[in-house]
Image (tube, rainbow over all chains, first blue to last red; front, side):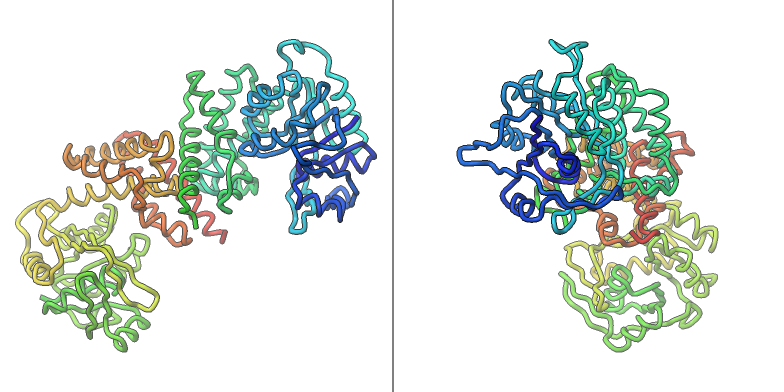
Length: 319
Length: 309
């Protein structure tokens, strides 16, 4: 099985480094500058599960967009939603007749885009619960969770069918590499579970500009957090993916934890003046709420907050 | 008529400076450091209406230099308690306190402390700031102070005299028979502006770029209007039109000073401007979902500020 990973950030980089460390055939498709660093140093990982450095195969976009080393069985796509169009252009030459794309993006909007470009049968469902960031020298600073989840999204020809060979092999590789999770028969539910969590925490950390613990300091903070979780849960249920009581109460506890240090990365992006996945994480959840006639006042505020941020960023009005 | 002004900050310094320049008897109640600077440099105002540098009378304690006919109070609402403690010795049987604060709650606090008959309504519209060197910069074309009896009745003598002094000083405004309505109008405007600017962290123009931005601003204004109406001070259609059109200027870079304070990490009048509006709404059974979110945002800010982040 040949795996191509686009980018070597915290998520794709950590996942690929573990696969490479276990001896699997992994190639990273990188921009010239990042490629140079990784060719020279290998992938440097600092992790609570043990630090390691592993040399990996690196390719860059060749002349005329050609890519070396293909065809690939699996392409892991871990990019920000707003970079998806350019990411698709980058991987397109690596996607052959038998390639499976495993996208690791937030929300659901990317599926329609990927399906339209590559065909639905090539696009599996996937998500990662890997926390970390890149250090100043391009090293991967892994800080905790190291789980992935992927599987058939179903529908059409694949409805009810067993997972394709490539996903079974990727699952086996993850198990041998010390990556948690793997093949998930209920990936759609998992995607919704994660989106509900992210939709709630990202909305409120952005709109309130604080951590969970900070938000709990406001008189109405816990109530507001509970309401937005309800809004997201209602959307998931209306879409056919009811969040189980167990998952919902776990999320509620985490989102309303007094003194909780949990914070959505979108807040860091905002405070740096960076781009944000406003539509992917919040706007699309709100749009689906409207489609189903679900009241979502808190999502509405959060999305207005993020759109205001984007307008201000566009006019250069951030400090 | 003797006037005591608490502090010689942006608004107090500007108003007091203009009053004295036109011959009024003005004393500033200041802290030792500010007194030293004023004695050394004088009161320095750079203004679109002409610069002034002048010697001023200062005292460190309210019981010096009195009795005073008028005490002008221009503190921030969160400093009100210490401001009251500072002016208390200056407030005698014949003194009138003229507070120039935003919102309404300070009036209840002042009434409780000094008696309702000593406290009149007042507000300032002066676009002014003080730089770290103590110079007062008046950069906008407007400078207005208005005041009046809160029951709308015949103004007491001290207010008539203050009116004459204000008119002589070139400051706009003066006696206002509808001061309480004016206070509500300004509070509705300011509360809507501060709540939306802070909750969205953008100028009014930025907010209008959001799909629901205009709707959210309008709803917020409505919430405030209902609270005012329940208190018997609905601004009416004309007043509301002025407020709404001011808040919905496409491309406006205008922002509430509270947003500047937020972005500087400074203290904010969250309770006074937004919290008190919500408290009054609750008492009157009025729903204020937008103000609720805005107030939560401000409380989160204050919590974060308190923990030093």
